[in-house]
Amino acid sequence: KRVGYAIVGLGHLALEELMPAFAQCKKSKVVALVSGSPEKMLKVARQYGINEKSCYSYATYDRLKDNPEVQVIYIVLPNSMHAEYTIRGAKAGKHILCEKPMANSAAECQAMIDACRKANRKLMVAYRIQYEPYNRLVRDMVRSNQFGRTKTIEAVNVQNSDNPAHWRFKKALAGGGALPDIGLYCLNTLRYLTGEEPTEVFAYQSSTPGDPRFKEVEEMVSWQMRFPSGIITNCLTHYGVHETRRYRVMAERGWIGLDPGFSYSGLKMEVAFAEKKAERREAVSLPDVNQFAAEIDHMSECVLTDRVPFTPGEEGLQDQRIMEAIYKSAKTGRPVKVPSAVKATRGK
Ligand code: NAD
Image (cartoon, rainbow, N blue to C red; front, side):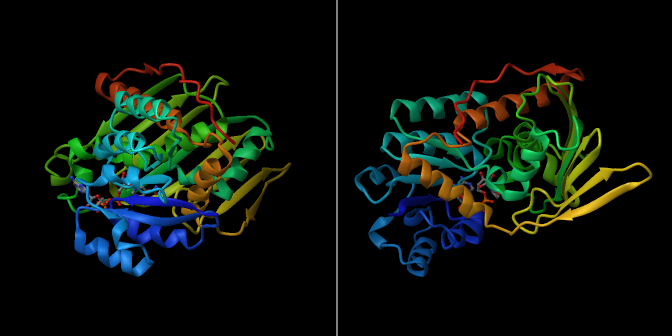
């Protein structure tokens, strides 16, 4: 039996990626929609065979509690709305799958965790990369010291974002600029690969003066993280340069690279073995899977078998706390200690 989802917010991600991804899911189906635009919603409902009675507005959202077909609410709204719709959704008795970044502050993340715990509902942050086979393979290679000890990792997630009128450039809606939107992938992928929590960060932040996109949010952040094993990582995120989405794990006897590593599809992996005279490079090829379908089916599996998701709310909270430390470091020009991790009961 498939787990029923309500999709909240019918914007770019929901329509271009998530709705089509459900066709690849084995345990999940969309049974309800929530949108501020009734015409758009009806069109989508017809296209995907969703009952018109299961179409809600933001005002009637709470009535989802009377719809037993809906087990999970997938929140795909602007970042500032994640907390409110998670909390209302949990109160309506539904499990929550929430898009990244989880919210705009650690306090909001904590309130979301508390609301879901109180309602005895599951809360998962939609970190698609952590359900994707290439990134999982890199994690396994790093954790098993395949190339000896990892000493450093460099991660870059940059793009040229246009349309200054979009909510992504409004601080109240987006929470920040490149960092919470795409820099977040560098941050949580490195935590995921190493299995360690950074203890200290140091950051630079800047925006091109006069660029209308960056009146409220930052254009770029470059930061370093220090991990307990001694690994120091370099990360870069940017909203004003041509796209690059890659990382390289550098270890004693080789490196592992994904380029791209954070894209929706078409990931490419290369490894380099240090050999006596030269290095030997090898491409590693895995079947491409739909990351969104893998992530959604994981949530369904957790609901069906009553398990904790692999990326529970505590993961989103920890990333938010680290981002707050990164902004503080950029502002003060000093390294900032990261509060020790909220011990997440991360599922498998
Ligand atoms: P979008 O602007 O395309 O869609 C947002 C939707 O929210 C729109 O349908 C809009 O009408 C609706 N909305 C409701 N109230 C709004 C308000 N007050 N202001 C603006 N829009 C409002 O954005 P998107 O790219 O689909 O992003 C939605 C969420 O998904 C964000 O949290 C984003 O970070 C996340 N996202 C995740 C990924 C990923 O790879 N996991 C990729 C893209 C976006």
